Image 1 (tube, rainbow, N blue to C red):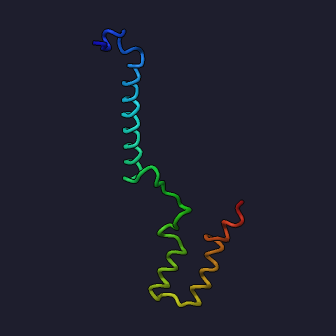
Image 2 (image 1 turned 180 degrees about the vertical axis):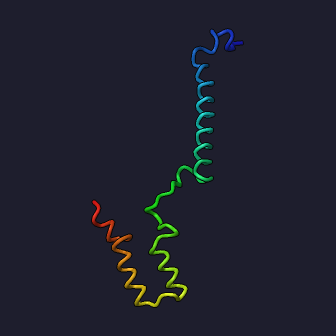
Image 3 (image 1 turned 90 degrees about the vertical axis):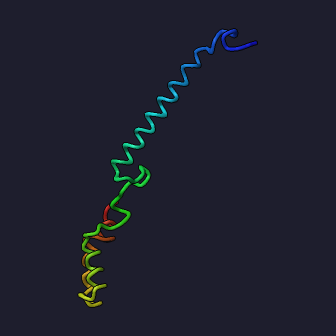
Length: 96
């Protein structure tokens, strides 16, 4: 029989197995810690402020007031143009 014991042993490559499992364990722990820190979202779902407006932004509040009927259409468009210059596209165009 030609087994590992008779062929000179497994050789130095046997050390790669513990290193592989250590790297897998460290990677798993790191992934879990990052996921828990982000509020149970994956690390691929980072929160950015540019994707969606904040809940308390003035433009969002104005839209809610218009939908509730507190503001008529003329006043809505007038206020939206002012807010858009300060908080919307107008302030982002000047920044390069």
